Structures are given as structure tokens and as C-alpha cells.
Length: 486
Image (cartoon, rainbow, N blue to C red; front, side, top):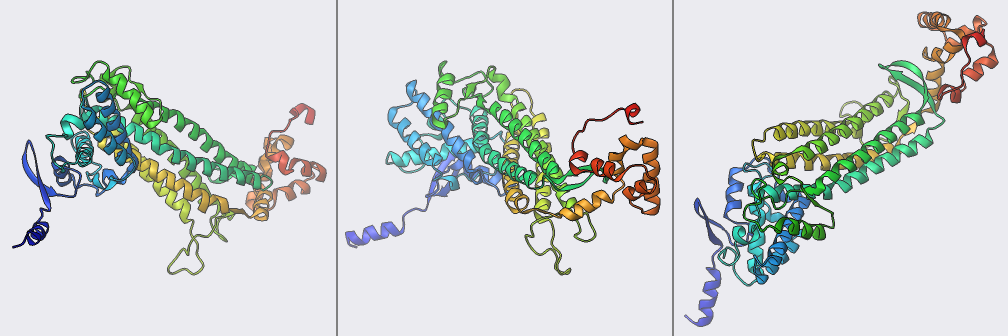
């Protein structure tokens, strides 16, 4: 066999797998994957949701940023050789760029308090760093996932720090979607400022208002929650990096914690601060609970808004029919012409999901024992999902519903002047007893309130026109005492 033939044969029979070992023994992996044996075991153990860490690119990015900060800090402390530190940081930069998202294959819900996610990151970074230095994957005697990439670290400070960073990076899109939704509500508040309609309490006619006032209220509630969410998210700048296993900082240099947090500030361009008590910070889930509660609050309020939209657009002939939602798709496979409020409906369902996520987070936060909460993975999973779902839902509600709403102005006005509730505006001028009698008769006979007042000569045409002026009915107006009116 010629030399050329030997080379060809060797190429054909080149191994497609590599062998790695851990404390449980040896396992074979595809030669081209960057994760290692511990990640492989995790994929087998945690086949739960089919949603992987890599499906949340910002969490992967955050993990790599933390690992890079650790490598730089260890390099400055002369704990990590320069060539290894440089290879690790270059590998981290490539992970940060999104190049290796598909190598983060561990299920988001996992046992072990996030150890599998941390090792997934350690193995991917180690194997890429080995390639950078000209070695084959799996040569962990040169760069080890544990001894080098995970140097001065524990899952228990890396994972929560990365999660905090991922949440900080995830929320700007949520803020933008809330701001857009608020903007569209504000636009409708201006557009509908002169459309008078009937306000309702307990689904019964109450007093007149403008459709613009209704949308102004939606804008106000969104602005309030947006400001509160920003304040809550600010809590995640406090991290326990350097705490290692339980907060005592075992296996770290005395200067390491401050130094690694400083490096992370530069890498992420976010001002992080060291938790005052690292033992407390390692086991405490308070910031996650607060954010989840705030997401639930916002979801509930927007869901209530969607309930309103569905009611106001109900009909069109046999419902309130005060507004028209933009038609998005045919509404029935059997009823011709039917169009459903599909966007408010889907936002309602997102709200239910967020409410459920909050309960899962609450239970997980409560389930911590002693110096660690091992349930952080489900907290991470549900927080990141809630943010993603709400962001998408708010964008859809703003662009595919609110922006296209039109008002049935004449119908709204007709319902006001034919309602029983209009008697409330007249009450200060006729007194409660007379107003009650008029309302009762109108209900019994179906007669118009205004016609009954005219019939009995209780108020003049001019007085009625003044009292029932839309502007006078929809905002405070100086009142006169009963004595002066009499």
C-alpha cells in the first residue's frame, strides 16, 4: 500500500467519538461537540422540558461574561497562567458572540442547583480554549473545566450572578414593549378625548366618561408599572460573586471577590456591587420573588385591560359595540362573518402563564434549606419565560390591536343619553329622592330620563343642556349647596 493510500485509509477511519471520564466513569461523546461528559450525563438525567439553556441566548452570554471576569481576575492574581487565561477569555468572547449557543444543551429545569448549567459552560469554554491553543477537545490535563475555567468559583455564586445579569439584559426589550403599549394607549386617549360613553361599575351603568379617559387610565397604569419594574430590576446589580459554595469564599484569594466583580462591571458595562453578606446573598431568593411578583402584577393589569377591550367591542349588534378592534383573522369555521378578539385573548392567556410561573417561583424560593436554594433552575426558567412572553404579548397588543381601534362615537353617545345612569349627573340639582323616583319610573316604563324631567317641568331646556354637557359630566365642576339651589 502506498503512502498516499495509507493517508486516505487513515482519513476514512478517523474516530468520530472521543472518550471522557468523570468520577462515575468513562463515556464517549461525538468528537465535534464542545460540551463534555458532565453535560452529557445531565442531558440524559434531565429530559424534562425539551427547552435548553441555549434557547435563552442572554443566559448563555451572561454565563460567558462571568467566566471571562473570573479568568481575568485569576490572571491578575497570578492564579492562572497567561496563555491559559488568554485562551479561556477568547473562548468566552466567542460564546458571548452567540457562536456556541447550540452547545448549551442542558435542560433548563435540572437538579443540582444549576451545577449542570455551570459545567456545560465550563466544558464548552475549556474545549474551545484547547482548540485555540492547538490541542484536541478533551485534553483536560492542559485546560480543565474544573481546575482552570471554574477556578475560584462555585455553581452557587456563578449561576445566580449569571442569572441576575441575564435578567438585567432581558428587561430592556420588556421595557420597550411596555412603553410602546403605553404610547398607543396615549394616542387613543387623545384621539377619543371627545367621545362620551357610559362608565360602568359591577357591569351596570354608572356615570358618563370619555373613551379617551378610559385609555388615559390604561396609559397611566402602564407607566406606573414600567417605573416600578425598572426599580425592581435595579436590585439585580447586587451579586454574590466570590462567595463560592456557601458564602464564606473558600478557595478564593482575599482580593478575588472585589476584583472579579470589577472585571464583570467592565465586561457587561453594568455597575455591579458586592452583596453585603455573601452567606445571606447565596441562599436568598428575595430579588427574584420581587421581580416575579411585579411581572405578575403587570400581567394581571394588562389582562384586565384586555377583558375591557373584549367587553367594549362585544357584539357587534348584540353587545356593547363601543369600539371596533382591528380584524386579524376569520373567527369561525362555521359562523360566516364572525371575527374574534384574538389579540386580547392571547394576551389573557399569557397573563395566566405568568401568574402560574409566579406561583412556581414562589414555591421554589420557599423550598430552600440552610445555605443554598437548590431550586434556582426553575426560578431562572420561569422568570426568563415570563419576561419573554410578556414582551411578545405587549408588542402584539400594541401593534395588532390598540393602534387600530376605532370608536363608534354616535352609538356611545346614544347609550349615555338613553341610560338610567345619567340621572347621577342630575342628582345634585333635583336631590336624591326625586332623582330616585325618576330613575325608578324610567326603569319600569322604558322612558327616557330626560323626557321624564321635561314632562314634570323639573328643569328647563337650558339647565338640562348645561348639566348634560359632556365636559360638565366627565370632570369635576363647582357645586352649589342645597340651600342656594332652593
